[in-house]
Amino acid sequence: EFPIKLYAMLELADTIPEFAQAVTWLPHGRAFRILDKDTFMKEVVPVFFKQTKIRSFNRQLHLWGFRRIGRGNEQVWFHDNFLRGVPESMDCLVRTKIKGNTVDSNDDRRILNFDDLPPPLPLPDKQPSAVLNEMENAILKIHSSSIA
Image 1: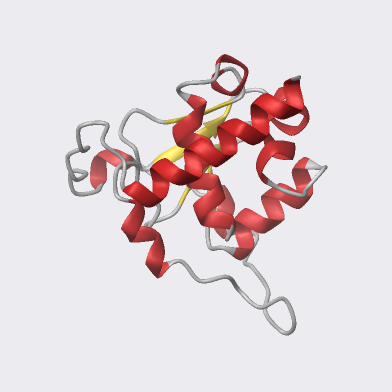
Image 2 (image 1 turned 90 degrees about the vertical axis):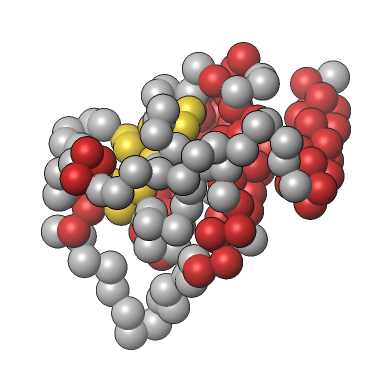
């Protein structure tokens, strides 16, 4: 599913230099930032997703309930149930059905002050769950074979 791949991508971004230049978790672990759209779409996205355009990727984020925060070209994305170190929180993510449902485009422009939110849960000691560990290994194999 999209959220699981997104989470794995962000966790791997810390370990793969090309990914780290393109996308990263924010320090509090409640949101992520796309640092370089071109590198993100050319190097990172093809390893995990089928999208080839940033607009298609953004649409998927919206359909899964993510909100873009900030203004202008800033690509910071947030979801209440998408937290670093708490992959089980993704169980609450639900994809919006396309027919008959719309995403409120005004909502994605609001400024969110993370200081107003309750403190985040403490991050675990870099010991991912077995499922996430297996996923990372599979993705690393895919990535290394695409480089070779």
